[in-house]
Image (cartoon, rainbow, N blue to C red; front, side, top):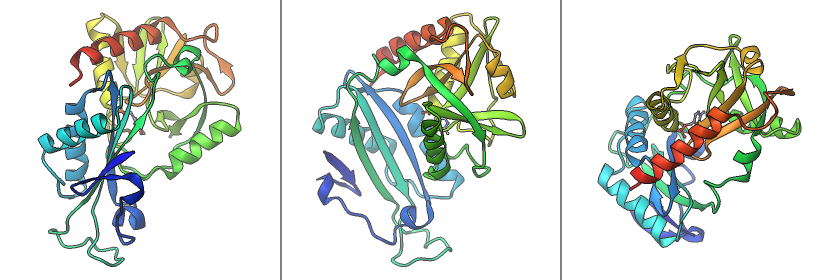
Length: 284
Ligand code: PLP
């Protein structure tokens, strides 16, 4: 693979960052993931806007302009010959050459790294045809989940807990309510109505969530943004998650309870189709 590091396109084996980089020492870093379909970027604008917000919330400098970011994304897609896949963008606060809790001076250059993952079959995914089985676990992450930081240890442990239970993913519960999935936003459908948690600092403001809720409204589907419990989701007709890396993913089982007939529900399937269709048309 060719990757991008601080202004250079390099083979992945030659790319280097400092051992004192705060991304490594302090998880002092944010990231974005943009999907690629037909060799084009899905919702680049949304991801660029959220990156800026994450950087601002942490008083981190912008590593480059939005136009430069777009150019880097496109060049990596081309150099790595990605038709379907993902582009990861990581920005850290960098380092002034030693370990210190105190932020380095404001003129310290952020570290910027981008790499691609080739994922043939991302859109026509067998996993989406089967639907995901999820478990619920307690949400013990920090309180600013609206900032897309690289603090992914607990979500990663959550996926491992799911795997150990023979499932695909975990939904996180705080104060008796579902926040979101380990790497996606969570929804259930009851009597035709789509329910999902409202935006706050408790969840990531999913770029796919925003697009899917808009498309659901345009398709005259009823949407309610409110807190919900895992028991409500277990009693639902269907459920699903959204993310840039898996689009709309039907959920067919929660904590061992089968939803409906145990296959992806009609609303999740339809939203996946609409999302893929419209996103392909709007891709750049
Ligand atoms: N929630 C969390 C915790 C995530 O990590 C992600 C994606 O990585 C999402 C939600 C979905 O966000 P998006 O649709 O922007 O990919």
